[in-house]
Structures are given as C-alpha cells and as structure tokens.
Length: 409
Image 1 (spheres, helix red, strand yellow):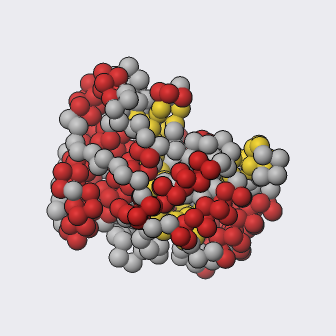
Image 2: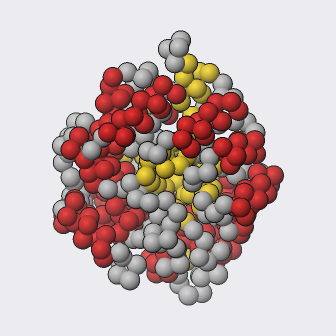
C-alpha cells in the first residue's frame, strides 16, 4: 500500500465509524484486488488498451499475454497517484442521485410495470431532479433508444451533475460539446464483465472517451455467490479489481483524467434462485464499505443504496428506501445511485416511488438506520479466489458455508 495515496483524515473517520478491524479489512481488500490483477489478469482484446499496458512490460510492471492483461501492484499504485482526488470534485459528500437505467416505466395508476420510456418521461425526471434540493444530480433513470436525444434533454432541463452513456461517435461528439459548457458531467462505462473480462462492445468507445478527457464513471458488478466469493471482502476485492483495471487503463491512456470508482458489489440470493437482491440491508452495507475504501484512497466514489426487492411501490419498498438512506447518512458515503425510484431488479422506474422516497430523504436521519454487524476480514475470501480463479462460486465451499449466516438481512 502506497501510504502517500491514503487520505489519513478519512482513515481516522472510517475507523471511528466502522471500527479498526473493518478498516484493516478494507485495506486488505485493496491488496487482494491487486493480487487478482497481477495473478488472474483481465481478458482484453482492445488493441490500444493492450498497447498502453504493453509499454510497461520491459519494466516488469505489466504483462500482456494471449489477450490477457496482468498488472502489478506497482503499476496500480503509480496509476492511482494521477487520479484527481475528492478535494475539488464537483459533487459533495452524502449525495443522493436519481441514478440508474431502468428499461421500463412503472404505471403507477394501473399498478404494473413494463411501460416503454418516452422523451417526456426523461424530461419529467430532469425537472424533478432540478427542483428538489435533496437530489444532488441524476443519471438517465430510464433508457431511450436515442442516446443523443436523452443527453440533450438532460442537459437542457437539469443543471445539476449528470451522467450518461456514450456508445457511438455521434454521442461522443455531443458529450464533448456539453462538456465545453459545463464540467459537471460523467460518462458511465461498465468496462468489465465477470469473470474479469473487458466488455469489448464498449471498449473502443471507452478509449475514445478517455482520450477526449471526459470524466469517467467506471462501474463493475461482480455478484457474491456467482462471480465472486460469498463474503464481504471477497466480493469487494473482485469488484475493486475490475474498477482498478479501468482506472489504470484510463490513467495510462490520458494521465490525470477524472475517474469515479463506481464499483457496485452485488449479492446473489440463493432464496430467489441466485438472482441479485438489491433490497437486502447487506446490499447497502456492502456498498457503503466499498465507498469507505475508495474514500480512504481519495477516489471519487459512486455506489448503490436505498434499493428494494419489491415489485411494486409497497410499504416495504419505502421502508427499504428509508433504511438504506439512513445507513448512508450514519456511516457516510460520497455519491449514491438507485435510492429513490427503482423497483425489483432495477427494471421499472416508478414516479410515485421517486416522489415519496425523496420526501423520506428530506426527513431521514442517521438515527433511523437499522443495526448492522460490521464485518471483519474473512481469509476464506481470497482463498476462494486463489482456488477458483475465473470460475463460478455457486458450489464453492465458502458459499455453502456462509449461506444463512451473512447477507441475510
């Protein structure tokens, strides 16, 4: 660990909130993520990303072999030194966004989902974000087929920080134009997909956005019990490794570019056929822990909380929003997506839930947070990774040993 990168003030804050043992666990997660990058590597066929890492082979800092990139801890720490920190970042701490991208809109009158999103829906989300002080900014919320139309609507109706995708040269050109006039935008990429593979459908545009110098929101979503170990530090390490790969690639392609660590560690719930359960209190805690590691590394950070597993905007859905928001305020985060409008699996966007969850956010306090057990380091997490590598974790002994013991609330 390069102690020069650590924000010592945040380390002390995290110790006071989480405890010394958990802070030590998180710093060990950083070491485990570097082990993953050095020993398992990341599958990557994108030639410019391969080339930029290949330049460090002579120094022994990276290896590119059979379309896999292996990165040493030395190169990781060297890359992190160039990432702009939190001091001058354009979003303050403990900020809730209308973030995420639902494929459908929930019909609040009929009581079911599946409505096709329209430009009018996007404009409505933007105006709500602009008018409500509790909302710090917004992502797309819902997805239109026309990427440029969506970013135009967002830029026109919301002056707060926004983020959106860029998957074409046309949308990149428009994003560059918007960035000339306002610097509070982020371009979202889920550069990697499990197990430790670059999503080649996005990699070319990732490189173009990096070279254009636009702020990068780098996401990754390994799932505990499927593509990552079934314990806190195991899934955190896998998530962190994937995002670190994106950060390193970005810094080597364009040193000093703004990078936001948007790792979203996720829990596969065996009670629902190993589908993701975003309503677990454990999901909130897991993402809060991810945020604390990044804050200690002085990285802008964007996680998920306040979500639900309810299919409809029920009392339980609102209780989930309150619990997640309160936990974020109690333990502290930077930026949070999904806390307002989304329903089960983040498939439907409910305007009724958006309005009520914003009202909850205006009154919620840290005292509303449920009690949680703050975890320490489980050695079996890295042992599972060393044993299974790029395999699947459903039958891993750690998964079966931990079922019903963690991620249960």
